[in-house]
Image (cartoon, rainbow, N blue to C red):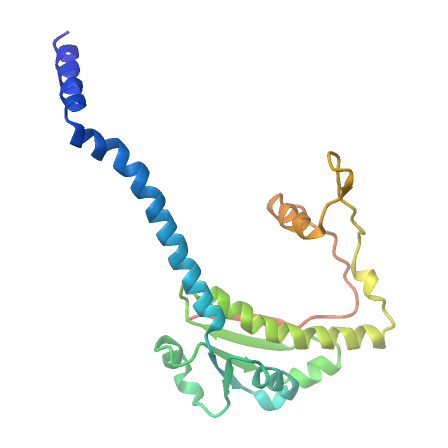
Amino acid sequence: MKSFIIAKKEIMDLTRDRRTMIMMFVVPFVAMPLIFSLMFNLQKNMQQKAEQKNLKVAIFGSEYAPDLNKAFTNSEDITVFNDMSIDSIENYIKDEILDAVITIDKNYKSMILNNGQAIITVQFKGTETTGVTKERVRSVIGSIEQKIINNRMMELKIKPQILQAYNLKILDILEKKPVDQRFYFPIQFLNGFNIVKFQNTEKKGIIKIYDI
């Protein structure tokens, strides 16, 4: 009984003190959205800077894959270095002198000609903006890889449609019209749905990615 009376008295004292009430209830409701908004804008600005940043990339073994080296050289906002010491690459990455180091296996050409998998090693420094850097490097590598795959498919007389198991048509029951496919695949991914993949004679290259 005494504890109830004491608790009641404390509550009454709190309600009388307007400053305390404001600090306990009003300020958090106002401050938290501002903090979240600030964090979101900060992260967004960091991502935009990473996307617009001029990447400094060193390529070792460029003579084995001139087409890949040319793709990086011709890319906007990417500066390629082909004459750096391979013994110092980890320090260059850690000190942010380089954003990425790409090492092409000496058997690249023979593996590609024989429909094999050429090994390409990519090294990064693990930072908050590494994801954007990875995607930019992968995009360049992927463009050359797709050309190689298209050539193989033409040689083997394989139609591109054979790589697609389904022709999906998504209908919205309420709207009675097809749903934009762009919205389907993220939902499909989140739900863990897996599209059937055909295994055929064409092979993609192996890309190994390491964080320094």
